[in-house]
Amino acid sequence: MRTIRVHKLIATHVQTALREVLEHYGAAEIRRLGLDIYGGSYNYRSSTGSSALSMHAWGIALDFSPVANSYGTRAPRATLSHPDCERWWQIWESHGATSLGRTRNYDWMHLQFAGL
View 1 (cartoon, rainbow, N blue to C red):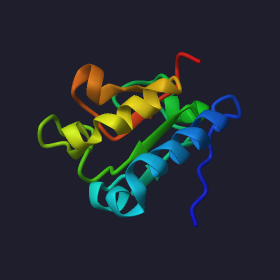
View 2 (cartoon, rainbow, N blue to C red):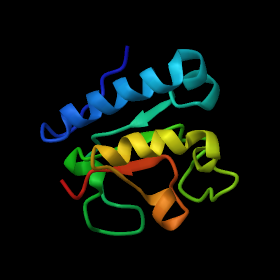
View 3 (cartoon, helix red, strand yellow):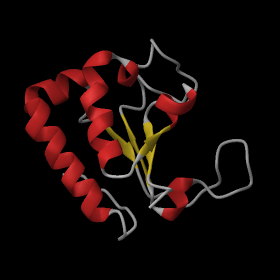
């Protein structure tokens, strides 16, 4: 089992969102959509192309299904941009997360809790 390391202020949000994703999709659909492929969270590093710290360095960002949703992959190629992942994003957004994919159409694997 993998551990997800996040900032203590978002830990409950992450746990609850993951539980809601499981309740909505079920284990088989989560696997089919690749939502079970965890790409990482806490990682002390700079943002891509910047000297500023990444949201991951603060423990307030998570990546899922990174191969199919990499930094430069845009909709509709990014699997997390597909309609069957709409509820995935709604769940995360209801807990305060934002998606760079949904707002800027890149880095679809990435969700962050910068506003909490």
